[in-house]
Image 1 (cartoon, rainbow, N blue to C red):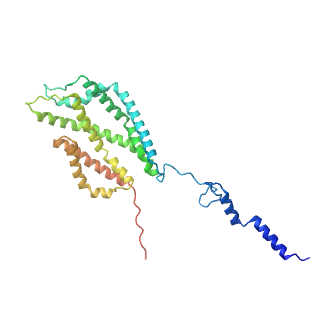
Image 2: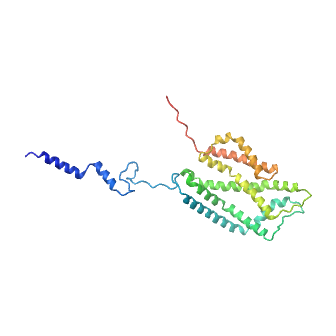
Image 3: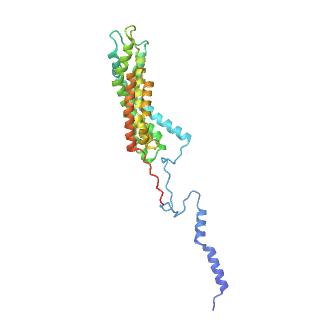
Length: 304
């Protein structure tokens, strides 16, 4: 018996309707899947269709204003705790530290001159300030690390890996600037001011006035000694290049002397003592930019 052609066509049509084509089946499966679920075998994921989670530390992750403020609050809290621990560690020897801190001025004072205190709690508060300064220097590597960690979300992964060396270098150069100011600048600056007074006036500075003036000088030298770290960071993110720094060397030398005139006392010796290291540190920054700066890919040459 010959098969009924109409029956076969209807049967095939019914089977095709129930099974559906592969494309229609995949489309209906994707449509029925819950929102957010990855389709199986999606091309490009390389993991059976499961999308890899986004890394929040990548530069593409944008933080909201509240997240930035929360991050800033947590970093500041850690810095305050570290400085507080350093303060308590240095308070026991704060008077000995103050005696060492006063030594550069006491060596150049005339025999009839001395340091005085014009208020009862002046020495007490000066000792507290000395302990806080020592505690800050003691905790400075951790504090600078927290500062760089706050900047880290805007950096690339390979740049974030250099945070600990950069934090240590920041603390090293800041402390080095303070040490340079204490051992090199203080004797010349204080001797200039004492000799400038002459014999008409008996100089008797107060402890708190001297401490504020000396700390201001130490901070100024500590900040300007961060120049190589700043140039290294700018070169790593591609804002400056070693070639550009060499091209602007003469303006950097002029800026070093202007900065020395603004941040140091009026004597020319102190200005030169700040401008000279700044020029040397600028050259160190050029070397760091040449060695670790962001490499620019050469432009492709046109052929034909």
